[in-house]
Amino acid sequence: MEYETVIGLEVHVQLDTRSKMFCGCPADYQAAEPNTRTCPVCLGLPGALPVINRRAVEYTVMTGLALHCRIPQFTKFDRKNYPYPDLMKGYQISQYDLPLALDGHLEIDGDPNLEHGRRPIGVERVHLEEDVAKMQHFPEDAEGYSLVDVNRSGVPLMEIVSKPDLRSPEEAHQYLTSLHSMVQYLGVSTANMQDGNFRCDANVSIRPAGSDTFGTRTEVKNMNSFRSVYHALEYEVERQRHVVEDGGTVVQETRGWVEERGVTVSQRSKEYAHDYRYFPEPDLPPLNIGSEWVDRLQSALPELAPQRKARFQDEYELSDYDADQLTGSRATADYFEETVALSNTKVSRPAAAKEIANWMLGDLSYLLNQDHRDFAAASVTPGRLSELLGLIADGTLSTSLAKTVLEQMYATRAPAADIVREQGLAQISDTGAIEAAVAEAIAANPKAVADYLSGKETAARFLMGQVMRLTKGQAQPELALRLVQAGLEAQRQ
Image 1 (cartoon, one colour):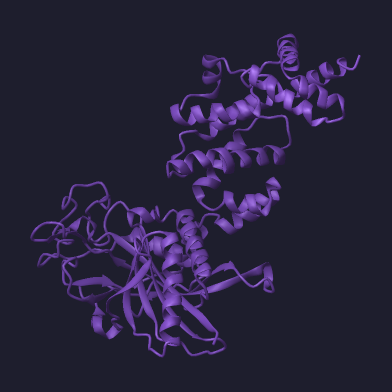
Image 2: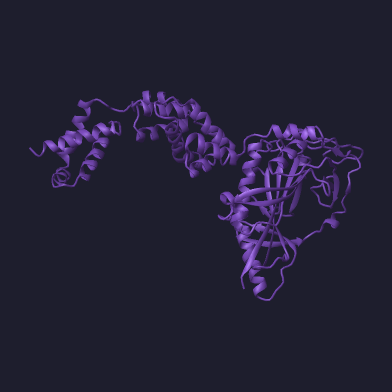
């Protein structure tokens, strides 16, 4: 029997605010010493009263608007009750039946028969809550113990819940990366998965192909990268299929992804909403989100990745692939446009843009990937990259020499001109100097000369390579090839 996969994602995004959700404690907990970003509110001490962080509300509404959600005029906060050591008050302030945003969608690449080949994935809700404290476990100790760091408790956390519209791990991966790009473009979160700023849980089920009845779902947690999400979903779908085909029944439960083993394991039975005993938060007033406030936030939304990609293709005449890669993150797109603006070459704007795209997506991306960095942390600034390309344009550097210079720029942060001057890397365009290298190459390679004279014109390329070696890559390539061909033709006489 054929089965259809049904996936819904719950994405938690830590909002990039200066203070926590309901108190004035700094939200920069990542590098702080344990329990140094706390106060009576986030410690859950008796009598401490919360105050709503306006910026967090605005960031959540902005995200809802970017996801084409409806923003209700009335919203409130609720208490979600469950006992766990990382929950200081014994409950979490969240939103239940009246969230800040409802009924939106996010488009992903899908059915080619649809307009623009894109398919909308429904977004059920976007709501706002507080993060919990962080548990640190030390099982290797003889007695075994756990510690609680309260610094993270109370940090604003936005939850984006998709509808069960995703039909494969590939679609889930695409939805997740698109959402990740969106929140970065909006500037509401750094969305660093390695720091826990962007976390994902997945609800997964299977059903017979053609059925419109949902199967029993499991919730998969502990996925800390896009790669983990993809492989965890792939494994869980296959696991459920084997359970059903073997005559078993899928149990509704929470399962954790174990990266080292590549499997999901049972953690606990899945809770239902009534298990949390939600009730309205009595210490916070309901919020009335006025239309003027929403209109102001709508007008402040930045250009997002899909719109920027379309503009890059139109304005810079970039290919679909190049435009897609350059707009995958806001930092990359900003870096590209700043470099283009600084470019001062004699070629056309589209030609300059294409050259910049090639260097960014090729050699510079390679260097950044080696250090697990993105363009926001690039040691080669747009201005420095523009200067390097200028040295290629004016003939100072060949492309191969420029690659060497770029590596040193990346390692030392020095300007290209300084590296070229200090190491004597400028391209040689003096005919006499190159002719001497050509004569040496021809004299040292009689077989290549004979091959050329017998009609193998590729032998000239081989000899040009020898000239480049003799000049340590500094000979002007086109001039070197012309002089090699002239020297070879002279051998015919």
